[in-house]
Structure formats: C-alpha cells, structure tokens
Amino acid sequence: MKIVNIADPSNIFVEYTIPTAGNADGMDMANGYVAVAMRESGVDIIDVDPPGSASVVAHVDTTRDAWEVYIKNDYIYAAVGTGLDIIDITDPASAYIYDTLDTSGYVYDVAVTNGYAFMASDIVGLEVYDVDPIDSPTWIGNFPVPFRARTITVIGTNLYLTADGDPGGIKILALP
Image 1 (cartoon, rainbow, N blue to C red):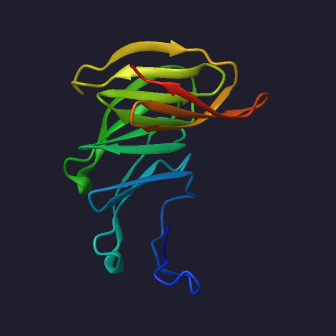
Image 2 (cartoon, rainbow, N blue to C red; image 1 turned 60 degrees about the vertical axis):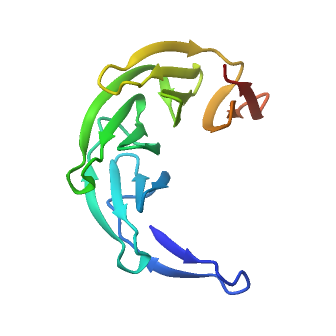
C-alpha cells in the first residue's frame, strides 16, 4: 500500500510504502485503520495513525477471494466471491472472521448502512442482508437488475451501482 502526499498538487509523491500480503483490489479506511482486500491473499489491516509509522497489524485469510472491503463500527465486511466475510476488529491486532454469509451470486463489492449490508452481485444484481444485530444476520433477498453489478456506494438514501455490459454506466436506486 502507498501513502501519497498531495499537499502540493504540483508536487505529488509517495511518502510511505507499506508492504502487504498481496496485490490490492479494494480498500476502506476508518478510525486510523485501513483494510485492504487482496483477492486470494485475504485482508490486511494496517494502522496508519500516524502515517509515518504505518504498519500491518493483522492479516486475515478470508474464506474466498477478497474483492472489496467496507469498515463499519468494529467490523470489516469483505466481499469474497460467493459470500460475505464479517471480520471482527474490536482488537485490530487480533482480527478474526466472526461470520460468513452465503450469497446467491458472485459478490464484488459491499456497502453497509442503517444496519443493512448491500452487495453488488454480478448477474444476480443487488443482494441484501440485515446485519443488525450482528450476531443474527438475516437474509433479506436479492433484487435483480438488468445488468451485471460491479461496484456499490450508498450516499444518503440512494444506492449507486456500476453496471458492466450493455447497458453499462451507473444505476441509482432509492432506498426506503
């Protein structure tokens, strides 16, 4: 992982390099930690506070290839192909897989908001789990969309999915 200094946009440079267990496919940051999804290499958890002493504090072997991660409270939600690994980071140095949820499609990305995990699930579309409370996640369902769902972002009450194929682009879905 690279920490890039952009203080002066005309003089951008790599300030710090932190070796990871594999090539990064996705990442998220919260509370001074970065979670890095590295496909077949799992997830690295990096303490980046302060950046000058950034280091990997834990590595978690995921149940399948880790494509993307989302940090919410004390958990990392990792999109791992045909599932979602929930990683407990209450103590980041002792992170572990708390639970694994099966999905009906191949999950590339995940976003968590208002107690729900929303997943971009390739040809299945949008998959949803109720993850509140975390100790009893409940499958809500999958919602077909007429495109291959690749990435997902939630802003306010809207969910944004990128679409692969024809028609491509960005699709915006309103959340209840």
